[in-house]
Length: 132
Image 1 (cartoon, rainbow, N blue to C red):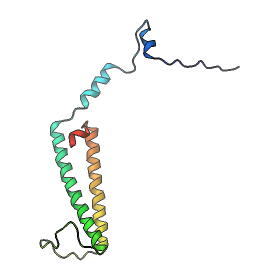
Image 2 (cartoon, helix red, strand yellow):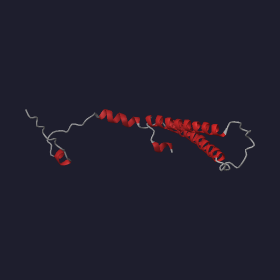
Image 3 (cartoon, rainbow, N blue to C red):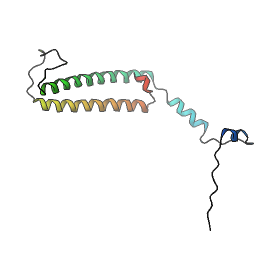
Image 4 (cartoon, one colour):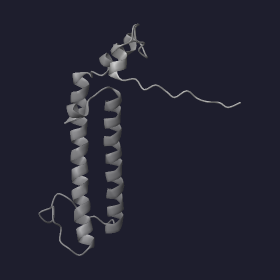
């Protein structure tokens, strides 16, 4: 017994136009209209997410600047982003390498929060362009 498979037919637009009966479409029209209504997000939610993202990104920028200053200090260079000693802050007795590791942990935590917030917004139907 030899099993000979019939070659598959590749349909083109010309073949579809020559058909006599209706063409079946996978899925139903009800399911396609339902997904369209879910894709619009609440404007208040978008505004709230924008504010949260701005706050988190601001904190992330400050952390990156502090991290750059500490790395420059540990390399023997002067601080580049701050204008010198800040009188509003006291003397920090924590070793520089520990401060750097703490700031790196804070940076990764902030990046995780931003990613989680963007992921939640995407799941709720917010377009990426709406959050800029």
